[in-house]
Image (cartoon, rainbow, N blue to C red):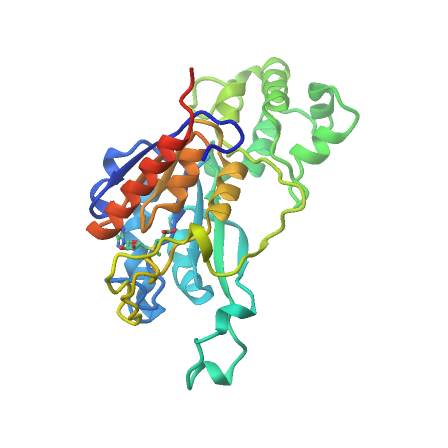
Length: 346
Ligand SMILES: C[S@@+](CC[C@H](N)C(=O)[O-])C[C@H]1O[C@@H](n2cnc3c(N)ncnc32)[C@H](O)[C@@H]1O
């Protein structure tokens, strides 16, 4: 159903491997990755997390190639699975922001006890790790992190740091927030950046102009600066611990009469259709926080395409892939169902 009175989004689902279609999808604003866990959870999921880094390497390369500076990545996995893949992500320019912990509650351990798990604390969590692109901008001697670039261009213009306050029309906040080199640095909002840029180019040493020119020729504009940073909409009271029991009830897809994973045999009509179906509420939270209407959401490892469903509900454009024809068919039905329930704009 539609959420928040949004116009309907669109979904494109490829029944095949994501790596075969990345090149045909528009650049993503958000990537929601829910692929291999190293638990033998679906055909092709390794039985252990030991080589998950290799499993993800070509995907991560493609994501980095297709991303833009404001793309965010939400990487679902087990803790050890994520730890194994993190170095690959970091090496390809993904900057860690934070870890969201899915607390499934004590009910999750029922039926999960064996000779290994009985000798440790019960595991009731999964993680979703939020990354953004590492932002580096061209300085005279090579790329600089955004905070260093801000200050280095100001100094290259020969301006004392305190004059950033005059540029921004504030008492002392501009120098303190935008030109500091410590952890209290703030990314200047676009209108403040426009003031800094205009001031540096007007009052800075004429010999060094242009200042703050990302392309080396023209100073960055307000809208170009805006596009370097992903949207962020604060949701009051929401923390990085998300408590939700494993998905059950009406939202959980059931049936299909087939084994859904090598380790799970539950062929009855009430068997879960897919072992890994994520709560829609989680996908909505991600997209409500980090996207705008019409944004492009990639869900490379579709399963039942929960992120794409949330994207459609919220009026975003989803691009998903799922090689298993059974899951792809279920997803197609699910996405069509969302499309039909969303009132079309008049
Ligand atoms: C963890 S599940 C995703 C569950 C999904 N988040 C949901 O809520 O339904 C991962 C899915 O990725 C699919 N998959 C595996 N390799 C893939 C690939 N190379 N490209 C696209 N999908 C793949 C699997 O068939 C499986 O259904």
